[in-house]
Image (cartoon, rainbow, N blue to C red; front, side, top):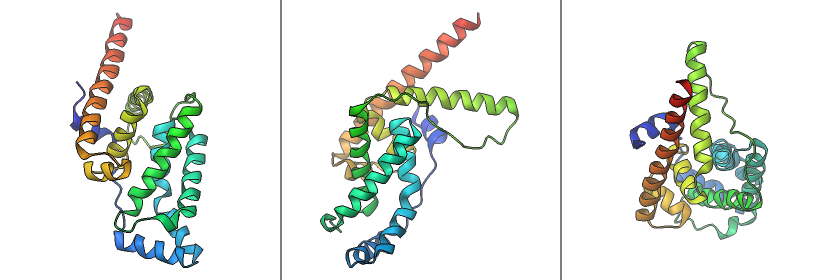
Length: 201
């Protein structure tokens, strides 16, 4: 079984968002015709949105396109934004839908990009790269529903409540999907580990 502590420690790059009031002010300014205000929202969230898209799609070019399309649709639909919700949760919902549309049109072919610096010895970096590749491959084998909750929880650092809000599903469903997704990842990774041991013999 793949423990939640392992996933959290390995994946988590916590994103610290600005206050909701700042986002709402920028939304209001955008609706008033100040296009640079929406540009500020794009700058604020494009990196984490791209990371989510990349982990869901496994292809850098597709992730860039999905992220750009999501921001375009968000701008077009900005008048429908409900200020009682968080802007970034609303953005996540649009982005996730874009990624699901892309996944319906094709299967991922390219490996996930990961440009994180190693910082250790060459041997340590090689091991870390191998572990990243295995986890990325396992992630892409999950169903879209499972992959989405893992990505939002462990790459975007969202709480259960935030994920539920972004996906418009009950928090109980988020926890259930995340538990099942972790179990499936554990099975995949353990299976690869055992096969590697057999090949070494």
